[in-house]
Amino acid sequence: MAYRQTENVAQRLAENRQKILTAARELVASGGFAKAQITAVAKNAGLATGTLYRYFPSKDDLCRQVFREVSAREMNLLAGIAASNRPALDRFELILRTFSGRALQNRRLAYALLVEPLDLALAEERTRFRKTHAAIFTRVIEDAIAEDAIRPCDAKFAAACFAGAIPTALTGPLAPHAGDMSRDQVLDEIVRFCFGAIGAPVHTQRKTASAVTSKELRA
Image (cartoon, rainbow, N blue to C red):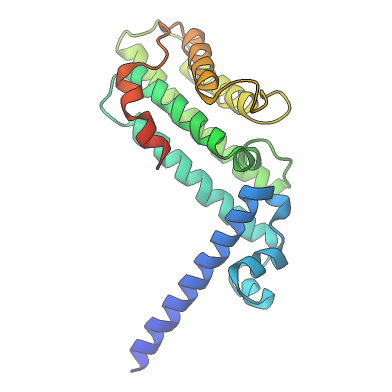
């Protein structure tokens, strides 16, 4: 009987932790990390504020975990595309469209992850996020060079440029307003810019990539 009680307690603890993370993520998605205050998270999770502190000692600890989980989900999706057997340029385009399309689906969450002013702890998480993003770009650019699909270039430097430029084009003061360009226009322009930057032939909505883009964006 004691073993069963231990299992039940462990399950309840895990469920409460997930409730807290879900509540925090929803607040971040609607108003950024500034909105994810402890009292608001506890209320959304249906838990007492004191209970929340048993799982996360501070708001910083909670927000770091939210950032890690959300960014890991996005990067794992892109890494899966990068590791697939498609030709390198098809993978490159699909990564561009998937990342950008998902950012456009939830602009507020994208703003929080990519450009919202953050404290030092979360800024460090963002740096890791961008390094991972750049590493994914580096892989497909190097593969494109190996396949003779593009001329040799500094893949790491190009990847760093993309990891910095794309978030700027999608979120923040320099990004086009929702009514200025359609979602498809934004994606096509990002693909055109990035393909041109590495000297690749520009084919927006390439058949191999576009055939799976809509499924990837719903993940």
